Structures are given as C-alpha cells and as structure tokens.
Image (tube, rainbow, N blue to C red; front, side, top):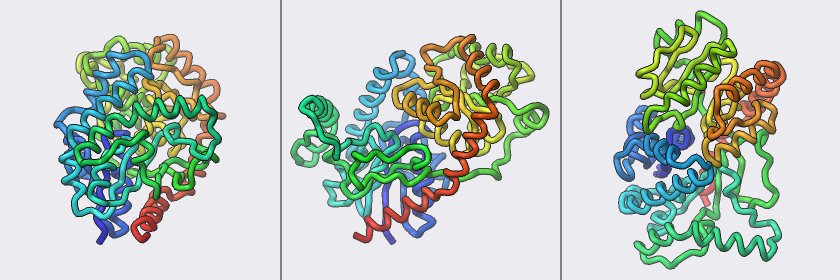
Length: 401
C-alpha cells in the first residue's frame, strides 16, 4: 500500500480541499495523512483522515483576522499573511521532515510546505494550486522587462525556501518554481470556470473541483425552524474574514441594516464575538459551523468573501453571489464570478457601507432570474465532471512512473 502525506497551512477554506482529496485517495486504497495546524485536528480526524500536527498550536483564523485588521490594503494584507505562513513553515521544518519519513509521495500546497523536506528524503512530490495566477507562463516568450521583473520577484520568493534548504545542506535556488514538482500540478478548478492558459507547461492540469455533498446533514432545530418558516434567506458567509480579532459591531451592523432596508431574511455565519452582544430581529438568525454544501442550498443568494472554498461552493451548487473580497486572491475569485455572470459586481471590504451593501442586494434582486439561470447551468457542467477521481488517477500515474 502506498503511503502519502499532504501538507497545507491556512484557514478552513484552504484546508478543506485536501481533506476531500485525502478521503478520495484512501477510498482508492492508499494511506494518506494530512499535516497542518494543530487547530484543525478535530476537523481532519472527524473526516476519517490521519492527522499530523505541524507548527504552533494557534487559532489560525484568529491570526488571519488580526493581520487583516491591521492592513486595509488587500495586497499588503496578502503579503503579510504570506510572510506569517513562511515563518511557520521555516519553524516547523523538523516536524515536516519527520512526517515525510516512510512516505511514497508528498502532496504539496502552493506554499511549498513539505517540498524541500521531501527532496531531502528523495521522495517525489505532486503540487496543488488553488490560485492559477501563481502559475508561471513558462511557454510564453519573455521580454527583457518580463525577465527582469520575474527574476526580482523570484529571488524574493525564494528567500524563505533557501533558509530551509540550508538546513539540509542544499544550495540556493533562484525561484520557488525550482522546487515545484515537475511531474504534476493539480488545479482543482473546473474547465467550465477557468480556461486553461496556453502558456502553462503540460503538467499543470485542471481536474475539476474537489467536493463532497453533505445533503444528509441535520441542522440544529432553531436553524431548521427558521428556514422552514419564511422565504429563502440571504446567506452571509464571510468565512475566515468573519472570525474577529476583536468585536466588529460596525461592520456587522452594516449588513443587518442592509438586510432590514431591503426586506430580506438572513442567515449570518461567523461574527461570534460580536453576535454575543447583538440581539438579531426575528428575520435573521446566526449559525456556527455548517457545511456550505448544505447551507448554501438553503438561500437564494450568498454574500461571501470569495475565498477559494466559498467561491467554489457557490459555483458547484448554483447559487448567485454578492462577493465581498478582503485580500488580493479573493478579488481574483470575485472577478471570476462576475465575469461568469453569476454575481453582482465585487464589493471590496474596504468600501463597505450600509448603502453599498443594500445597493448590491437590490442589484441581485433585479437581476436574480438571469444570475440564477447562469449559476445553475454552470453548476450542471461542473457536476458532470469528476474532479476527485481525475486527481486520484493522475496521482496513481505518478506513483507508477
């Protein structure tokens, strides 16, 4: 039996695809574990996947919220987050190395967590990329200016990895691309959503989304009663962006006031600190951790931050969106939804106001039939693919080579 390890760091939306993949691999007869933040132990083990704690025992979503709160600029926020993740990966290299031992293949996220340790042990790797903007256009003819910019960015991105390489007696690389797998880079996105870039090398493959339906989920009675006694609500699901470092009453009030002004019922996910001191009207209810595969189907539209997980779920289940991106990669997914015609124009978090939220909801209401029809058509195409099985088959080919 082949033994595999998958490593990733980040919020739940960034961890969940690796859980789906690990489960699919294990159903196919492999032995696959996930190494990530200690705070995700219960989530992963309750999914039936072996777990290895990597890095400090911190609340990663709280840490992400703190970084976001200090920097309103999406690009700066993303860079600070990347530096934070790099520091953790560097500090955890001993744990990663130990978790890699005895494995036949290492599955590496875009942070390259596990790539150098696998190389040091002579273990092959496969990459996973969620943000396609990060894939180098190696087949495109480069101008001198492109090369200059690329070399500068590459050198900056390589610095944290070179520190890890030094631990294992390896020389420096000029770019992080040099430590990526040359065998396979899995992109868990549908070809009906993202057209394959002709300048990508052949090992970058769009598999289709990785997901599992949880239609048998049973909600708590108060939520079930709320949904059964009224029109379909809007779902407010800002993911890790609603895990507050401190109370965010002003922000939550904007949404509550906009729901009132537009006459909408709403389910609010997250904002737990703030909601502890807020009395919601009868037309609104809060909920904690509820699977998006079930929750999104209960609403007529979803207001979300456009992380990979929520953007994917809205597309997979055919639900129109109001995107509220907070950081740079989320803006990319938001623009993707808008271009597909399944969302309103993106409403950047730094531009939030009661009036702008209400205007976005009113736009959704005016154009709902068109957006819903497009969302359902794309969802049917997505569901005709089998992204998880495609990924498993591609990994099997790497192991057999």
